[in-house]
Image (cartoon, rainbow, N blue to C red; front, side, top):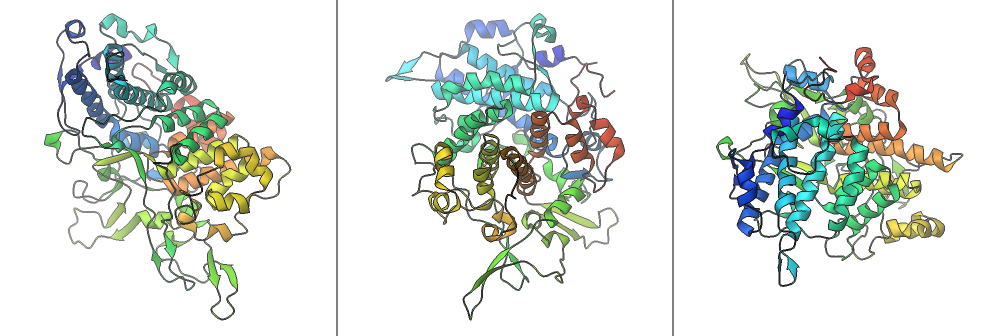
Length: 555
């Protein structure tokens, strides 16, 4: 049986040659001791090779980021055509030989990051600037992000921050086991000095190739339970303290064209913040295969392996779509909803329109029995780009942090209104604004009703006018926080379905409240009714996580 020790040792091959954008790297496994002695990273060319190698290794976990985050959630279910590995992953039965259970790929990135950080020249300066300061910040961000994925997916993992150069040092028993809370605490301190460091600018990559340190720090604080700090960091990133690169949520949406509810227009595209780019041809390096899992392709004879869950469909249909209507004669306004007699074809037209805008299932006009009679398309799935962060996702986590910091009105405002100057002064009391001004005071010139509205409006129409979409009158602040927290969880499902983020959102909620039953019920009910076998399995928290090789918990 392959052990953790061999996994860590398999990550020891360091990238030595790399060129071009997202090209593959040649790896050499000759004496690493000689490499350390003779090749300190004190030359720009050396750092280019090593840095590009880290970027290349990120490609190896790109597809898995989506699969591990989406299949083990409540939003999709495996079909009868799913491979054994896909089915087992979705049913929390993936063993150590499952092709998607390869922690060695994560440790390969960590090992290379550790090596880079241990040997790069941190004091080399030119014209008063540290030459490798930007690269160091970027590599630290990759390492922290990868460790966060590892801890979320495996529960507890050997934690190593120095390069391992001898096999005897790869014994996992030599290192502490860190869960996601410990990982978060460590990297909050590690990344804090880098929060204002710009991205590297001399490698030919665009900004999407890098993980924004401020956003990652906010995520880490969210996992660690530092909610005020998390909200502040998200706010600073979105608002941008220099006012030169602000991030408005936008006004794109999927909506009914008019009061007749006969036609739908628009598609709320995602605004990417960080991505992993893949190659278009396998001869150039790593290519993506997500479409073969989520969609109908020639490669799978149109037999898609997963489909939207009944729970996602139910949640989407249960939303209230509202339209602000003005009478052409009296000019009186009213909020209307689709009539009860409206026939929805397809069913995803009912309620929230975001599912309809990204998912289609049609008949396949073919007489060839080799192919499936149905064609599934999910527009969010890409073969060449895996999205790690979007502006919309960041706003939802910002709302989560605001709410848990004690500001449920503003958190709900992110969903219903959007936070900008005019809304702050008309939707909230002066006392509320004063109490949270350091977290919600968006620049009045950069954020207006022309580029900012509530994220719920991306699929539910003029929700800012919907009197039923509101925080009810509740006895205590804690009750309001709980209500808004559950609303945000639902909004995350509606907004980020198929984006590979759902498992971690559910896990964060369950760990925060120490609520095993909530997680088990949520996931086991994805088929529309409770799967008692899956519920029983997930009632044991250790089954939430993938087994590390050598761990027989799922044998």
